Length: 181
Length: 114
Image (tube, rainbow over all chains, first blue to last red):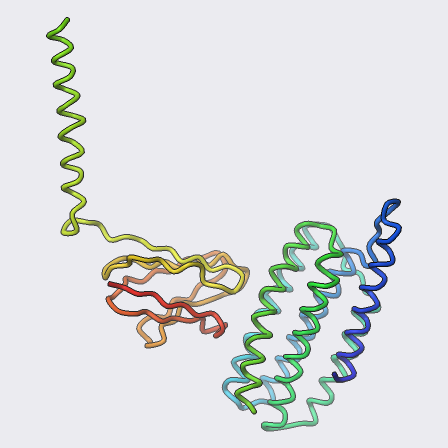
Protein backbone atom coordinates (compact mmCIF):
# COMPACT_ATOMS: atom_id res chain seq x y z
CA UNK A 1 0.00 0.00 0.00
CA UNK A 2 1.33 3.44 -0.86
CA UNK A 3 1.94 6.12 1.72
CA UNK A 4 -1.20 8.26 1.30
CA UNK A 5 -3.46 5.23 1.40
CA UNK A 6 -1.62 3.89 4.41
CA UNK A 7 -2.22 7.23 6.11
CA UNK A 8 -5.89 7.02 5.15
CA UNK A 9 -6.20 3.46 6.42
CA UNK A 10 -4.51 4.42 9.66
CA UNK A 11 -6.75 7.42 10.09
CA UNK A 12 -9.86 5.30 9.61
CA UNK A 13 -8.35 2.54 11.72
CA UNK A 14 -7.85 4.97 14.57
CA UNK A 15 -11.39 6.20 14.13
CA UNK A 16 -12.66 2.61 14.32
CA UNK A 17 -10.68 1.85 17.46
CA UNK A 18 -11.82 5.10 19.04
CA UNK A 19 -15.36 4.23 18.11
CA UNK A 20 -15.10 0.87 19.87
CA UNK A 21 -13.57 2.53 22.92
CA UNK A 22 -16.30 5.13 23.00
CA UNK A 23 -18.96 2.48 22.76
CA UNK A 24 -17.58 0.27 25.53
CA UNK A 25 -19.00 2.34 28.40
CA UNK A 26 -22.01 2.81 26.16
CA UNK A 27 -24.66 2.47 28.84
CA UNK A 28 -24.00 6.03 30.05
CA UNK A 29 -23.60 8.02 26.81
CA UNK A 30 -22.85 6.28 23.52
CA UNK A 31 -20.98 9.20 21.97
CA UNK A 32 -19.50 8.12 18.65
CA UNK A 33 -15.83 8.85 17.94
CA UNK A 34 -16.83 10.94 14.96
CA UNK A 35 -19.98 13.01 14.67
CA UNK A 36 -22.24 13.49 11.64
CA UNK A 37 -20.68 16.87 10.77
CA UNK A 38 -17.26 15.19 10.60
CA UNK A 39 -18.59 12.18 8.68
CA UNK A 40 -20.16 14.51 6.11
CA UNK A 41 -16.84 16.35 5.79
CA UNK A 42 -14.88 13.11 5.32
CA UNK A 43 -17.31 11.76 2.70
CA UNK A 44 -17.36 15.08 0.84
CA UNK A 45 -13.55 15.34 0.93
CA UNK A 46 -13.19 11.79 -0.37
CA UNK A 47 -15.47 12.71 -3.30
CA UNK A 48 -13.60 15.93 -4.11
CA UNK A 49 -10.31 14.02 -4.13
CA UNK A 50 -11.58 11.56 -6.71
CA UNK A 51 -13.03 14.33 -8.90
CA UNK A 52 -9.64 16.11 -8.80
CA UNK A 53 -7.84 12.88 -9.72
CA UNK A 54 -10.30 12.34 -12.59
CA UNK A 55 -9.72 15.87 -13.92
CA UNK A 56 -5.98 15.22 -13.91
CA UNK A 57 -6.59 11.96 -15.80
CA UNK A 58 -8.67 13.79 -18.40
CA UNK A 59 -5.78 16.19 -18.94
CA UNK A 60 -3.08 13.54 -19.11
CA UNK A 61 -4.51 10.31 -20.51
CA UNK A 62 -5.10 9.52 -24.17
CA UNK A 63 -6.47 6.04 -23.47
CA UNK A 64 -10.18 5.90 -24.42
CA UNK A 65 -11.17 3.45 -21.64
CA UNK A 66 -9.21 5.36 -19.00
CA UNK A 67 -10.78 8.64 -20.09
CA UNK A 68 -14.28 7.09 -19.98
CA UNK A 69 -13.58 5.84 -16.46
CA UNK A 70 -12.29 9.28 -15.39
CA UNK A 71 -15.42 10.92 -16.81
CA UNK A 72 -17.55 8.46 -14.82
CA UNK A 73 -15.64 9.30 -11.62
CA UNK A 74 -15.89 13.08 -12.17
CA UNK A 75 -19.62 12.92 -12.95
CA UNK A 76 -20.66 10.46 -10.23
CA UNK A 77 -18.64 11.84 -7.35
CA UNK A 78 -19.75 15.38 -8.18
CA UNK A 79 -23.39 14.18 -8.25
CA UNK A 80 -23.08 12.39 -4.90
CA UNK A 81 -21.37 15.43 -3.35
CA UNK A 82 -24.19 17.65 -4.63
CA UNK A 83 -26.63 15.35 -2.82
CA UNK A 84 -24.47 15.48 0.31
CA UNK A 85 -24.37 19.28 0.23
CA UNK A 86 -28.14 19.47 -0.24
CA UNK A 87 -28.61 17.11 2.71
CA UNK A 88 -26.34 18.96 5.14
CA UNK A 89 -28.06 22.20 4.15
CA UNK A 90 -31.45 20.62 4.80
CA UNK A 91 -30.27 19.25 8.15
CA UNK A 92 -28.63 22.54 9.11
CA UNK A 93 -25.31 20.79 9.65
CA UNK A 94 -21.99 22.48 8.85
CA UNK A 95 -19.42 19.89 7.73
CA UNK A 96 -16.59 19.92 10.23
CA UNK A 97 -12.93 19.56 9.29
CA UNK A 98 -11.11 16.83 11.17
CA UNK A 99 -7.81 14.91 11.18
CA UNK A 100 -9.15 12.18 8.85
CA UNK A 101 -10.22 14.73 6.22
CA UNK A 102 -6.85 16.49 6.55
CA UNK A 103 -4.97 13.21 6.19
CA UNK A 104 -7.05 12.33 3.12
CA UNK A 105 -6.38 15.70 1.49
CA UNK A 106 -2.63 15.70 2.09
CA UNK A 107 -2.30 12.07 0.95
CA UNK A 108 -4.20 12.87 -2.23
CA UNK A 109 -2.02 15.89 -2.95
CA UNK A 110 1.09 13.67 -2.67
CA UNK A 111 -0.46 11.11 -5.00
CA UNK A 112 -1.39 13.76 -7.53
CA UNK A 113 2.20 15.05 -7.58
CA UNK A 114 3.48 11.52 -8.15
CA UNK A 115 1.03 10.93 -11.00
CA UNK A 116 1.87 14.31 -12.54
CA UNK A 117 5.43 13.09 -13.14
CA UNK A 118 4.21 10.08 -15.18
CA UNK A 119 2.91 9.88 -18.73
CA UNK A 120 1.53 7.47 -21.33
CA UNK A 121 0.72 3.93 -20.24
CA UNK A 122 2.79 4.32 -17.06
CA UNK A 123 0.44 7.09 -16.02
CA UNK A 124 -2.69 5.15 -17.02
CA UNK A 125 -1.66 2.09 -15.03
CA UNK A 126 -0.66 4.14 -11.97
CA UNK A 127 -3.88 6.19 -12.05
CA UNK A 128 -6.13 3.13 -12.36
CA UNK A 129 -4.15 1.16 -9.75
CA UNK A 130 -4.56 4.06 -7.35
CA UNK A 131 -8.29 4.23 -8.12
CA UNK A 132 -8.65 0.54 -7.23
CA UNK A 133 -6.79 1.02 -3.95
CA UNK A 134 -8.53 4.31 -3.15
CA UNK A 135 -12.04 2.95 -3.69
CA UNK A 136 -11.19 -0.17 -1.72
CA UNK A 137 -10.02 1.92 1.22
CA UNK A 138 -12.90 4.41 1.08
CA UNK A 139 -15.46 1.60 0.77
CA UNK A 140 -13.87 -0.14 3.75
CA UNK A 141 -14.08 3.10 5.72
CA UNK A 142 -17.71 3.63 4.71
CA UNK A 143 -18.84 0.15 5.70
CA UNK A 144 -16.59 -0.20 8.75
CA UNK A 145 -16.67 3.27 10.30
CA UNK A 146 -18.69 6.01 8.63
CA UNK A 147 -22.01 4.20 8.09
CA UNK A 148 -22.07 2.54 11.55
CA UNK A 149 -21.15 5.86 13.22
CA UNK A 150 -23.68 8.04 11.36
CA UNK A 151 -26.51 9.09 13.67
CA UNK A 152 -28.87 10.80 11.21
CA UNK A 153 -30.94 8.31 9.22
CA UNK A 154 -30.83 10.37 6.00
CA UNK A 155 -27.06 10.76 6.18
CA UNK A 156 -26.70 7.04 6.86
CA UNK A 157 -28.92 6.26 3.88
CA UNK A 158 -26.94 8.56 1.55
CA UNK A 159 -23.69 6.93 2.71
CA UNK A 160 -25.19 3.48 2.04
CA UNK A 161 -26.21 4.55 -1.47
CA UNK A 162 -22.72 6.01 -1.93
CA UNK A 163 -21.18 2.69 -0.87
CA UNK A 164 -23.17 0.82 -3.55
CA UNK A 165 -22.07 3.31 -6.19
CA UNK A 166 -18.43 3.26 -5.14
CA UNK A 167 -18.39 -0.56 -5.03
CA UNK A 168 -19.45 -0.43 -8.66
CA UNK A 169 -16.64 2.07 -9.33
CA UNK A 170 -14.18 -0.27 -7.64
CA UNK A 171 -15.36 -3.13 -9.86
CA UNK A 172 -14.99 -0.95 -12.96
CA UNK A 173 -11.49 0.11 -11.86
CA UNK A 174 -10.49 -3.51 -11.26
CA UNK A 175 -11.70 -4.56 -14.74
CA UNK A 176 -9.86 -1.61 -16.25
CA UNK A 177 -6.65 -2.43 -14.36
CA UNK A 178 -6.83 -5.99 -15.72
CA UNK A 179 -7.24 -4.74 -19.29
CA UNK A 180 -4.23 -2.41 -18.96
CA UNK A 181 -1.86 -5.23 -17.94
CA UNK B 1 -93.15 -11.86 -6.25
CA UNK B 2 -92.02 -15.03 -7.96
CA UNK B 3 -92.19 -13.31 -11.32
CA UNK B 4 -90.11 -10.41 -9.99
CA UNK B 5 -87.50 -12.82 -8.62
CA UNK B 6 -87.33 -14.67 -11.91
CA UNK B 7 -86.96 -11.38 -13.80
CA UNK B 8 -84.14 -10.32 -11.46
CA UNK B 9 -82.43 -13.67 -11.87
CA UNK B 10 -82.75 -13.34 -15.62
CA UNK B 11 -81.23 -9.84 -15.52
CA UNK B 12 -78.36 -11.09 -13.35
CA UNK B 13 -77.72 -13.90 -15.77
CA UNK B 14 -77.62 -11.42 -18.62
CA UNK B 15 -75.24 -8.97 -16.95
CA UNK B 16 -73.15 -11.49 -15.00
CA UNK B 17 -73.10 -14.26 -17.56
CA UNK B 18 -72.87 -12.64 -20.92
CA UNK B 19 -70.73 -9.61 -20.06
CA UNK B 20 -67.69 -11.61 -18.82
CA UNK B 21 -67.91 -13.83 -21.91
CA UNK B 22 -67.57 -10.80 -24.15
CA UNK B 23 -64.66 -9.54 -21.98
CA UNK B 24 -62.84 -12.85 -22.52
CA UNK B 25 -63.44 -12.45 -26.22
CA UNK B 26 -61.73 -9.04 -26.13
CA UNK B 27 -58.64 -10.53 -24.46
CA UNK B 28 -57.70 -12.51 -27.55
CA UNK B 29 -54.20 -11.64 -28.88
CA UNK B 30 -55.53 -10.09 -32.10
CA UNK B 31 -57.05 -7.12 -30.29
CA UNK B 32 -54.78 -7.10 -27.21
CA UNK B 33 -53.24 -3.73 -26.27
CA UNK B 34 -49.46 -3.59 -26.08
CA UNK B 35 -48.13 -3.98 -22.56
CA UNK B 36 -45.79 -1.60 -20.78
CA UNK B 37 -42.94 -3.40 -18.99
CA UNK B 38 -41.06 -1.28 -16.44
CA UNK B 39 -37.42 -1.85 -15.49
CA UNK B 40 -36.49 0.12 -12.36
CA UNK B 41 -32.92 1.36 -11.99
CA UNK B 42 -31.67 1.91 -8.45
CA UNK B 43 -28.27 1.92 -6.75
CA UNK B 44 -26.30 1.17 -9.92
CA UNK B 45 -28.43 -1.80 -10.95
CA UNK B 46 -31.17 -2.63 -13.43
CA UNK B 47 -34.05 -4.28 -11.53
CA UNK B 48 -35.56 -7.66 -12.48
CA UNK B 49 -36.02 -8.14 -16.22
CA UNK B 50 -39.66 -8.48 -17.33
CA UNK B 51 -40.72 -11.80 -18.81
CA UNK B 52 -43.28 -12.55 -21.52
CA UNK B 53 -42.38 -9.47 -23.52
CA UNK B 54 -43.80 -9.43 -27.06
CA UNK B 55 -42.81 -7.44 -30.10
CA UNK B 56 -44.67 -4.13 -30.07
CA UNK B 57 -44.76 -3.95 -26.26
CA UNK B 58 -43.29 -0.91 -24.54
CA UNK B 59 -40.12 -1.22 -22.45
CA UNK B 60 -39.82 1.58 -19.93
CA UNK B 61 -36.75 2.28 -17.80
CA UNK B 62 -37.35 4.33 -14.63
CA UNK B 63 -34.26 5.82 -13.01
CA UNK B 64 -34.72 6.03 -9.24
CA UNK B 65 -30.99 6.45 -8.67
CA UNK B 66 -29.27 9.71 -7.72
CA UNK B 67 -27.04 9.45 -10.82
CA UNK B 68 -27.65 9.74 -14.54
CA UNK B 69 -27.87 6.41 -16.35
CA UNK B 70 -28.73 5.12 -19.80
CA UNK B 71 -30.19 2.06 -21.48
CA UNK B 72 -27.95 1.65 -24.49
CA UNK B 73 -28.32 -1.26 -26.90
CA UNK B 74 -25.18 -3.29 -27.58
CA UNK B 75 -26.17 -3.35 -31.25
CA UNK B 76 -26.77 0.39 -31.36
CA UNK B 77 -30.54 0.13 -31.95
CA UNK B 78 -31.47 2.38 -29.06
CA UNK B 79 -29.82 4.74 -26.62
CA UNK B 80 -32.10 6.08 -23.89
CA UNK B 81 -30.64 8.75 -21.59
CA UNK B 82 -32.09 8.70 -18.09
CA UNK B 83 -31.47 11.66 -15.80
CA UNK B 84 -32.14 10.99 -12.09
CA UNK B 85 -35.86 10.61 -11.44
CA UNK B 86 -36.85 10.30 -15.11
CA UNK B 87 -38.14 7.52 -17.38
CA UNK B 88 -37.54 6.58 -21.00
CA UNK B 89 -39.26 4.16 -23.40
CA UNK B 90 -38.68 2.10 -26.50
CA UNK B 91 -40.97 -0.17 -28.50
CA UNK B 92 -39.68 -3.72 -28.30
CA UNK B 93 -38.69 -5.61 -31.43
CA UNK B 94 -38.41 -9.39 -31.49
CA UNK B 95 -35.08 -10.88 -30.45
CA UNK B 96 -32.64 -10.64 -27.58
CA UNK B 97 -32.08 -7.08 -26.39
CA UNK B 98 -28.71 -6.71 -24.70
CA UNK B 99 -28.17 -3.28 -23.16
CA UNK B 100 -25.83 -1.50 -20.76
CA UNK B 101 -25.36 1.89 -19.11
CA UNK B 102 -22.96 3.92 -21.23
CA UNK B 103 -21.97 5.90 -18.11
CA UNK B 104 -21.44 2.78 -15.95
CA UNK B 105 -20.39 -0.17 -18.11
CA UNK B 106 -20.63 -2.58 -15.18
CA UNK B 107 -24.44 -2.16 -15.39
CA UNK B 108 -25.84 -4.62 -17.93
CA UNK B 109 -29.17 -6.26 -18.78
CA UNK B 110 -30.60 -8.71 -21.30
CA UNK B 111 -34.23 -9.05 -22.32
CA UNK B 112 -35.88 -11.63 -24.57
CA UNK B 113 -38.68 -10.33 -26.82
CA UNK B 114 -40.92 -12.88 -28.50
